[in-house]
Length: 163
Image (tube, rainbow, N blue to C red; front, side, top):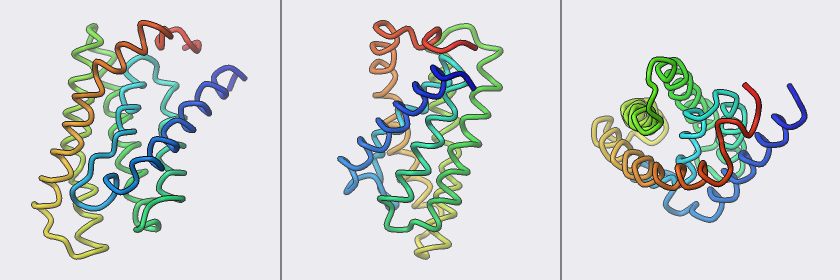
C-alpha cells in the first residue's frame, strides 16, 4: 500500500473515531444515529477507502461501544459486508448519486446484522431493533450524501488516492 493511500485512510479512520466520540450518546443501542456512517459513502468514490472506514469502525467500537465485544464482531462485519456489496455494485453504476443511493439502501438493509447483535447481547426484539437501526442508518446516510458530494467537490475523492 502506498504511503499516500495509508495516510488518507488513516485520516478518514481518525475522523470516524472523533465523530463517534462526539456523538457517542446517540451512536449506540437500538435507536441510533451514528453520524460517522456517512464515511461509508467514501467507497463510492474509491474502493481503497474501505481500509479507513473499517479501521474507524473497529476502533470506534473498541473504544466507545458499551457492547464492545459484540460490536467488534457484528459492527465490523456489517460494515465490511455493506462496503463490499457497494464496491461490487458500484462497478455497474455510472452516476455517483445513484451509487450513494445504492450504498444507503445496502447499509439500511444490512442493519439486520446489528438487530441480531442487539437480540443476542441485550435480548432486544429483533424486528423492532432492525426497524429503528435501519431508520437511523437511512437518515444518516441520506443526509450524508450531499455532505460527501460537497467534500468531493473540494477534495476530489475519486482521485485523492490512486486506484
